[in-house]
Length: 124
Image (cartoon, rainbow, N blue to C red; front, top):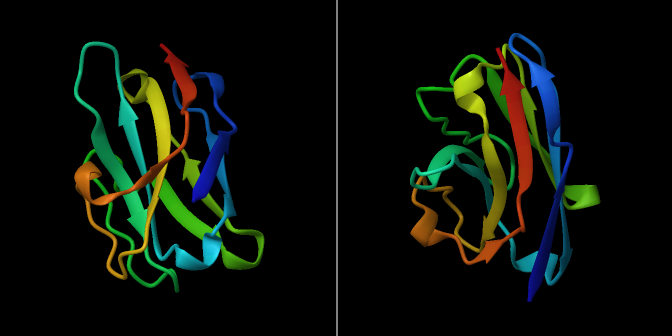
């Protein structure tokens, strides 16, 4: 089993920045792909960004491209999401996900491990 714990969420004004962290524990040697998803009230969970083991494959949702950056530190079993130029529409619960797949995908159904989520609220 793998446990994922997110941190770094909070309240920020539009245009501000936040960095989310997701620490993995347990059978972390089975993890290759990691990703971030988000869910706003009344909406479906949506893909934000993902990363493969080496960090060389990092797909992003069009809505965050150029503003968000995903990275990982394998020595710390941690993945990060640097969020800049935040907008009110970025307000959501952000979830970390992990899977043993080599290629990171954009579908939530391909990820087997999930964190509890961290709230990000962007005020206008």
